[in-house]
Length: 329
Image 1 (cartoon, rainbow, N blue to C red):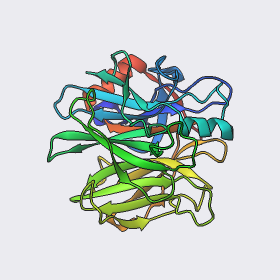
Image 2: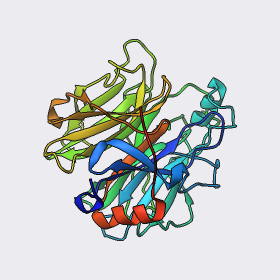
Image 3: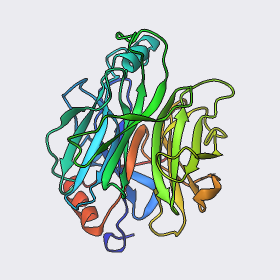
């Protein structure tokens, strides 16, 4: 499909590696308007990186600002590689005394980006701030930014007692000033990687119970009347576990050509090659998700977010970064 016929999608993500530092920001783009086939831009190289905070970024989320001024990209401030990679002791430290800040960039055109800035969003009682996402609140005309944090009591200032992850949310109008966060999801067991979208007047949220218990619900899909509602109904759980042992990092977005179709990309990390795999539904209210036939993405394309592109944005990215790695997976 030619550029003249398509606008397509941009996937902003990081790349996992146990041999070199790749916890940076990468761009992949759909092949035409097909959101099930992806190729990595910029000759496979990172587009952005951070030397602030921990020196690494994961789980990026991109926002098209409602005022038309451009884009904000935010990410987890976490570097795993070369710092006790994937050891239990390291993960305990990162979740109890890790970074409580997000790394953010701004851009008017998706090509030229500001210098990164580090913004503390989680309270001192939190052990970390992971996997940020944002959703626009049309009533208050602000963005709801939410992330995962282990929380600790006032009597545990060094965060040594057992804890678990909840989802916290804060309001911002400009991605510089954030309100005091509040807990929006607490199941009594660690939950991570929540994303939320609006569809048919409802809010659908997706999150992972971060557990290896046999009875764990795994990746869940729930629906409620609004973001802060207490009436969320579970539509599906253990999404993706019919094929993969563990999935996380859900990203959900509508198909721009097929009316009513939604795509769900999940990051499977227990089997090699790791990275995103795809599902879809033609009725999101059903909670029924099917595997996308022919889905492909470069190996180790990890936890990110998807942005629908205009034709001029597609062309601008093409000129700046070109296309590179497609996948045979």
